[in-house]
Length: 632
Image 1 (cartoon, rainbow, N blue to C red):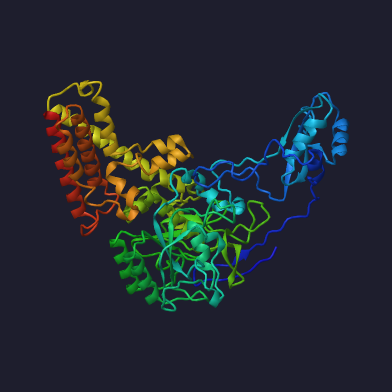
Image 2 (image 1 turned 120 degrees about the vertical axis):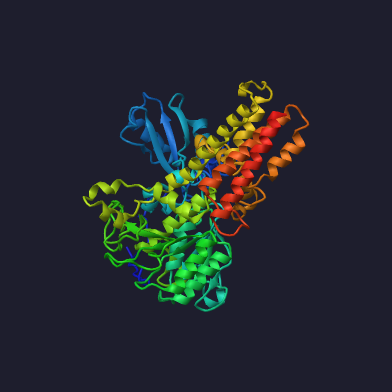
C-alpha cells in the first residue's frame, strides 16, 4: 500500500492515497479450438456484454460482464454423472472444470474460466459432440448487480455513503440542476496542457459551471493542491460510468472557486468575495471545507448577503479536536458539520461546541474498523502526489470531508423544491439520525458533538417531498370541502361519474402532485420520469421545465393559471369541474406555501413577509375563482 500525506489550512487533515493491485491468476482456456470445432461457422448465440439494459437508469446501464479479459462457462451435468466423469470430459475439451461451490455437488454444477467471447462457440461445439444425456445445460456465467448501487468499481470502499444511506436517497433524487459552489483550492475540472494541468477523469461526466480563481485573479479555477477536487468529488463525482467512485448528488453542478493556494492557505478577503460571487452567479449551495479560529466581519457580511439571496451555506466544524468554534462554520446562516468515522462516533479531530449543527462522515485513516484492508478515510479522486497532471483515488479524513456530504444532501433537498436555506437546514436536522445520543449521559454534550445527529440523505430527500406534499394535499381537500359547503352541495362526490375524476384529479395535481408515486415505483425509469412531472404540483413545473433556479416563479405561484383555466373551461359543463378542481388545488398549494414557505418567491424582496402576503393573496383569489366556478 502506497500512502501520500497532505494537509489543508486549519481544516484538512492527513490523507492516505491507496493504490490498488490484484494478484496474478491463471490464463483462461483459449477459444481457438472451439472455433475450429464449428469449421468457421458463426455461433448460434452471442456473448454477454455490459449493455444488457439501454434505458435511462440512475446509474446508467446494467452490467452482465465486467471483466473484458475472460469469461466463465457453466456446465449443468446430469445428476447421475460422477464428478470424475464430468472433470475428465472437461479435460477432453481443454477445460479445467471445477465445482462452483461445495453446494454444487448434488446438482452437478461445474464452471471453467475461458477466453473472452468463447462461450457461444463452446455451447455449440458441446451441443454437437457431447454424449447423449450427459449435459442438461451450458451457459455463460454472467454477472448480476446489486439494484440501487452504482457500477463504479471503487464504490464498494465508500462506507461513508452507506452511513448516510445514499442508495435509498438516489431512488428519490440525485440533485439534478442544483449548483454547488466549492470554495476551496480549486477543482481539477479543465485541461490546460500548456500548464501540465489535466482534468480528473472521474469528473468527466460532471457538469461544471463557470467559476473564478481569486488567488491568481482569473477565470481558470485550477487545483494545485488536490483538496478541492476531493471535496467536489464527494458532492458530484461522475457516477455510473464504470470508473472510480460515486458522488452523493451526482447530477448536481459544481462551481469551482479557488481561494486557497497550492499550500492550502487563503485570505479572508478572497473567501468573502467568493461567497458573494457564488450567490450572485446562481449557486444554490456553498461548501466551505476551510476555516480559522478568528471571526471576520467582512466574511460574515458576505454570508448574510448569500443567505438573503437564498443560498444554503455549509462549512466544516474544524479539526482542532477540542471544544472551540471555527469560522465560518460558527456564523449564523451556516450549517456547521462535525465528522464521524465508520463506527458512527465523532472523530478524534472533530471540533465541538454549541455551534455544531449536524454530523456526517469525515473518516479516520488511523483505523480500519470495517476490516476492508484499507484505512477508513473518505475516498474520492484527486491529485496524485500533488501533480496537477496525475490523479488517483485517495483516502482523506477531516471535517473537510464531512462538510461536502451535507452540501450534497442540501442539493438533494433543494432539487425536490425546498430551496429556502432555513427550510433546507430544518429538513436536514429534522431527519438526522440520533442513535448515538444514548451514549451520552449529558444531552448537551451530545448536541455539541453531533448537533441534530448524523445526516441521513435518504430521509432528508424523502421528507422534502412528503412533508410538503401531505400539507398541500390536506389543504386542497379542506378547501374543497369548504367550497362545496359554501355552495350548499353536500354530495361532493355526487357531482357525476364523469366529472368526479376530473375534479379530484385536477385538485390533487394542482395542490400536491402525485408526490408519493416515485417512492411506490422504486428505482425505475418510470419513477425518474414521474419525479420531474406529475409528482410535482403544477405550480412547481417551472423547476422541472426550466431548472431549479426558476423555482417559485411569481407567475406560476399566483392566481394566473387558475384564472386562465376558469376563463377557458367554464363554458363546458364537464370541464368546468376540472377548472374548479385545479383552482381550488392551486389555492391549497398557495395557502400552504404562505405558511411553511419552503422557497423564496422570485422577484419579491426579502424571503418572508412580502412572500407570504403574495402567496396568501393569490391563494384567496384562486379559492374565490374555484368557489364561483362550482356555484355556477
